[in-house]
Image (cartoon, rainbow, N blue to C red; front, side):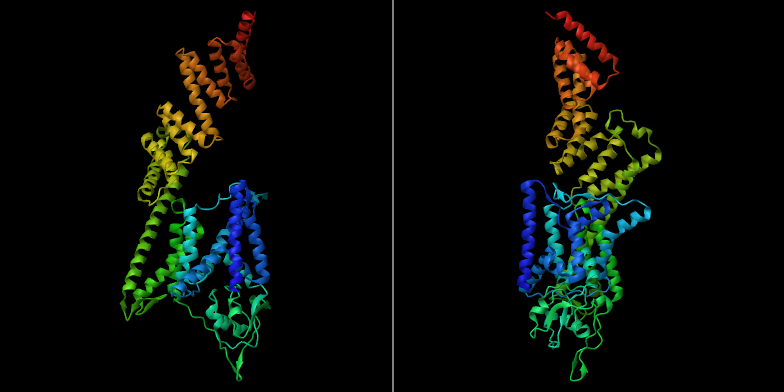
Length: 587
């Protein structure tokens, strides 16, 4: 069965690659077939392929159990590959058995898919209207960049197996698995056993879903553990062909009792689950894992939720091992003896060092996250308006002392993010720009925008922002160049187009005042070319063209000005002047 499942998972990746190739080639394609996309359907009414796939998977699980997890998930493939590689290295990943951490996937699933809808209903907000988003042009819009995608695979597909065992992410991190585990409980599809079972334990030894198969079939006549992903490996290795997939009473109803007997005695006594950590240790681990998740989620605008979940799970496990190193005489981790007879081994000290480095990184990340959150919260509360981009900005002088204090506090928090952060954060620079401008600290605002441009050279908005600061400080030629750069990156950027047109207009009016008529016509033509629907631009271009001795060319601009502003008496009067001049000079 493992060969067939490998083929199935390879085909999944072939389909994924084909999906991306189709998008690159055509510019539009089916929206991502990713369950997390269902959040956009529930919260914004965007019907997409991810929602349909997730709903279909849940329905299939209601009947067949967790087949989709075992045979159709790309992260299962990465975890299986990691398990295979570790075994080749002589390491068999020991599964973590926990009664508290196993609740994490369901908690995350509720947070992602239930809480937003429940909150909306509680607040009385109507459900969003359903709209068709099955086809997308920006396929990668909701996905991280390639670096974070690779890190996600390495952490949630590989590293987590080494720490938490085969299917570690499925068991302790996957929110979709949280729902699949619930629906599996009512599914009739089960791994069943016949009387040929001799309790040899081959099935449990082979199971990569960390299910104690031989115990379950002895007690219930079938596998009832919702962690069973129907990989069918246990069926394949059974020497007596005693296991098979079939249908039986769902485990939520208790399952069919199926005691095994051997010589008239019950072979399977009452089942007692052994957990790797005490309940108190698990609660502490869960707290550390939650804190780690909060510290790294969205860090530097990069870490997505599922990667943060994987990092939180690993942090929780490492913390649990550190507790054992402090409290127990003998501690082992996978194939490493960390502590023996009360003495920490060389491997133990290395483990402790890694734990300290990870802890320091997490605490540092938490501090950066706190300052980013606090700074952004204060900035949003200030409602700084566009007037700060204008020369003679009166926002600061008109602000209350309380508002000024908040500006300074927000600036301090965000400057700490900028100084302490391990990665550049363009969002922080963007907020700092507004805060600096509000305080008339134009030099710092310009520096922040130049750093944004260096960090994101393909984004149009930082160029437009820098042009705005240059315009405010009177450096019109430089501002014009950066507005033109903005439009070269994004020709549809209407705000940059309007700002550039304004620069050409001001320049043209200044040239007109100096009686540099032809130069004024060229500048005003540039303004009209960028913003043809502005009446004052059309009017002044008509005036300049008339002054250049071309009344016939001036008339269409004056008439456009009248069309755009029919109540303008100056334009109507100037039209009559042009008509009289044309009549006078007509042969």
